[in-house]
Image 1 (cartoon, one colour):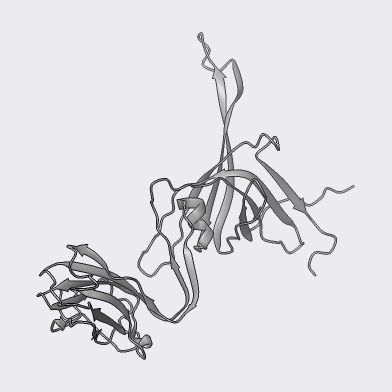
Image 2 (cartoon, one colour):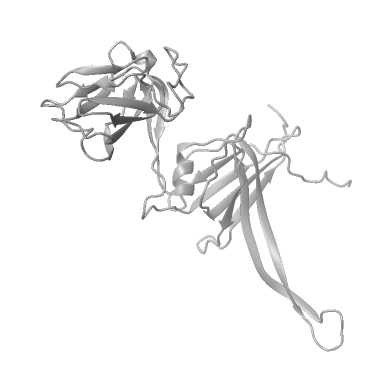
Length: 297
């Protein structure tokens, strides 16, 4: 009988991480630059005497690693690599965060400062994604600064007033219980209920989000963050004869993620994770190959 066609692996289809204890999937990586299961063994050699060659060579440890390149950033990536799931909001009409004091305590004050910041009704299309700083210029006036200009062409086109990143050519007056607009940015500052008396050079900050299909926020680096182990099913690309490989890796430990931003380039990180022994399954993974009778259907 003639020999069979040799087996080979071609391409990558997807990688689906799962919870080892339950098997429940986190989701899947669909946009992958590749995935490689590297099993690198060590040989322990016996040498001695005048022989330039070893007398014996025996098995040492095997280092098991998963090297993979996820080109997408699903929510579960933050949990598996950095220890915290994000909060995702869909179909949001536009919003701003709470105004929070940074330097001093007088800018955000429900009575003597700015009570709140919000989206100006009817100006939602002008809200520009970014972080903003409010600086007290006097007891009753403030300047507003923007820390990113990437979204300034949304709605009404805007630009910085000067190199300090200031947005307001003249200070905005804060009056009791009244709203004043940050011109062209779709947000307004509402004064406190009493006599306005801010301290010069005190600051406060807020974030703005335009109407969106998706909005994701995640805090990274909190003390006590738990980065879990996970399992993963890794599937090769289906070949023209229908040949397909599936690898079920039982226990994986990864940590960290590079958020790369290079000129005119997508983020293409390369992650290296440890593969661990699973005592219940007496192994580290299972490899399966299929060559179906019907190649494509």
